[in-house]
Length: 442
Image 1 (tube, rainbow, N blue to C red):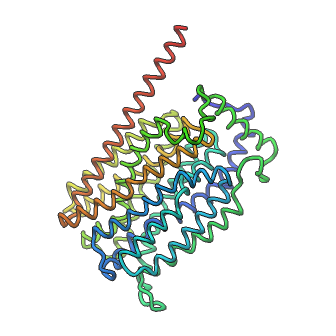
Image 2: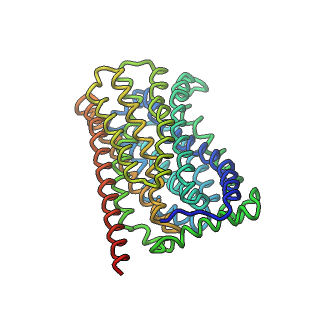
Image 3: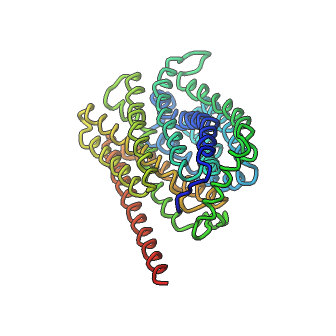
């Protein structure tokens, strides 16, 4: 895709600034709420598992099964979004998952917890690709990386929810409920509230943006249209169904499976991994937040570097490789808590930097409804790694009595993800050079 240089640079800068401040803080807060509700089970498990008699394997299954219903319903959810609009559908998603999260506070055992997680996956299906699709309809490619970095920054900030939720355990006995039940009840309420706010604030397209001047609305529309026309294969016109099976989409599904395997295994089990280091509950909360918080600065710099060079594949591979090295350090030096924690922080820098780069990649070769389909397949099917990561972690913990083997697996699959993207990037460059040579020969 060639670089877009709109004629009215001042108008474009003003328009992008208004859109950025109008939408991105709200979208960022929505992601904080998403990860708070997705990961609260990791903190709740510190007391919930013993109260309900849930084993490590059973917890891993219940925590990860969320991704099965999420995966099955992700593509149809995104199809509906293209028909009814992002504002209505994302609002519906948030209100629904908030209600399910609150209800999870009243589970009675492994079976009811598993059912609650299946319902949560069904409720959340479509949120992330829906939001990314929304961003792609408002931000041209040159501004898209910055917008996506906002999202990942707020995802990192959501880690502050871990120490907050550990303090909610202290509500044990209030109104006759255990502290871990209060975690689910109190973290579900913000999703319902934010769902209502989303409905009131988001707009489907620049034409509906009353906060923009007419020339600013026109600038955004023309910039996005120029990108679609600039595509040599007019891939913006690819159908929804073709977007589901686009070759590069299928490769990125494999990459995302590897990534979410490690990310979700790590996120959901980190409080219990740290508990094996014999840390206090409050210490676990704050240390669990460190990898994501430390990642914010390096992630922003790496995304800016990627935007400046308009390159994604190599940047993703370097970040994923960094995460693999971090997990390898944590596994090798697990018996030395300080070094293991440093390894986890290095892994966090790599993980969140890789996430910020990855979510910009589908929009580089898909557009229109095909982009919604591509996001849905990658985020949905790829998130099956989010099931296998927690499940295999629990199985390895029960089998070996240690988290070290699972941490080593996190490292290995991230290294695989880096290699796959390097091969994909190399193949794309070879095809581009060959096409350029054929054009010159003609």
